[in-house]
Length: 374
Image 1 (cartoon, rainbow, N blue to C red):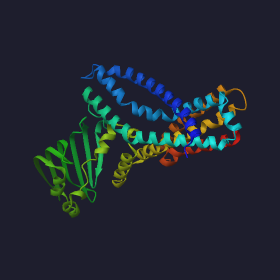
Image 2 (image 1 turned 90 degrees about the vertical axis):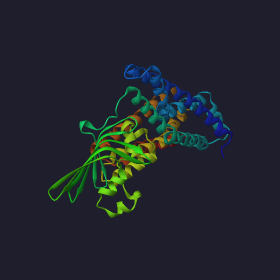
Image 3 (image 1 turned 120 degrees about the vertical axis):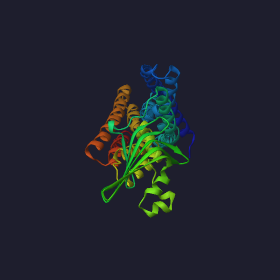
Image 4 (image 1 turned 90 degrees about the horizontal axis):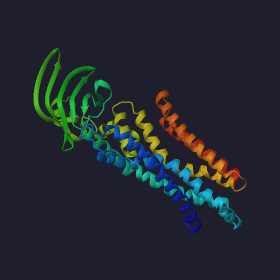
């Protein structure tokens, strides 16, 4: 049960962790705001817009800085208990090291659930609103890959999108349909916008290629699913709207303006399924998914990593030095995590292996350190 001792230790960790987190987020927000001032005056982007943008990115900054803040907070909070001889009194009163560790782990689980909830609900929505606000104010179009637009696959059709506007209106959409590796139809739409859970294509030119003959047709506007129904060769697609694949997934468009790391695990999983079902490279999204899974777990590992330094400071001097070493160890974890994630993309390592390896290694280090100091 969550008794008096658990609440006392948990409160010590929670208070110092929140103070550290608020300090780190405040510093990151100040530097972010200074960086945004360079764009003030472009389009309709004002100081108020920059302040709004930075404010909306606070949940994302808190999510990224949470594990280091918990490490620093636990070192300071538990270190204060050790320097005041409170941990010594607890041990002298018959409270085992395992009981103290249990109190820390219980607190860590609570913190882990809180940051997981923020990462799945508050952060993705706030990041999306922030990016849409910024792009709209700057009157920018969303960036697509290179000067050849964004290429996607929808069933047997290859879709190229020239430009994605901030409201996700598509400009210059081209669809190529293949049959037995032969081009049978090409469609070009000047615009496409979402309407009633479908895409409304506007100013369309359709070119059909049949046994050497070429025919062209122009249509003012048509819904995507109706266009597929009229121009498909697959009876299943004709019989059921639900079987007709979307022109492009809305989640894929959101990921253009928002980094995968800022999306929720559910959205990332949906994107992985979309990419894999269309036989597209999903490694970058898979890596972001496993990093998202590992991030809350790293909070618990950081707490456990602080325990050996706190217990060791009870027995010998140099508590400040041990805390400094603990902080450096946390920095090493962050850097190792970044290096492995980049290596995963460059060398083809398993995304799950790359995301979870630092976590497992530092968990082993924490367990060995705890056993040697308790």
